[in-house]
Image (cartoon, rainbow, N blue to C red; front, side, top):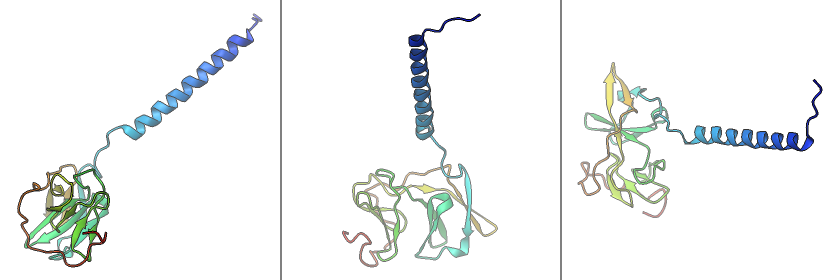
Amino acid sequence: MNEHIDRRAFVSKAWKGGVALIGLAGAWTSWDLLRPRRGPGGGEVRTVAADVVPEGGVVEVTAARAYLTRVGDEIVAISEKCPHLGCRVPFCEQSGQFECPCHGSVFNRLGEYREGPTPRGMDRHPVRIEDGVIFVDTARVEAGPDKGAPETIDEPPAGPSCAGEH
């Protein structure tokens, strides 16, 4: 019952087992980082009351990763992702425009293209209003307006760019 274990064979198997465990841990970690994920919430996100969204202004809804803006009686939900490379596009209060900090794309308050390398305007999410509360469907994305499409609102920049370049 007392078998003699060859020391070299034992160390060799231990090293191989250790390397295999490290490889397995690396694959597991890579899968966690690279697997596709659903959008924020993966469905409807309850946001704010409809009367909170001002005419001519923008309300950020971090839970939906979107912005809400009002044009007349319509409320539009605009995705915060730039269609160019997916950077988060902040709204610049002083210029009244969305300005992408990554590559300089600029969009009006409705997310329509103004300048830069982006292929189209900012994408949008469907909106539903129930009992005065806005729900944004983050699982559905509607492509933004084409790059050459005319702007539907006539709002020139309100002031200097937040980036200081536009």
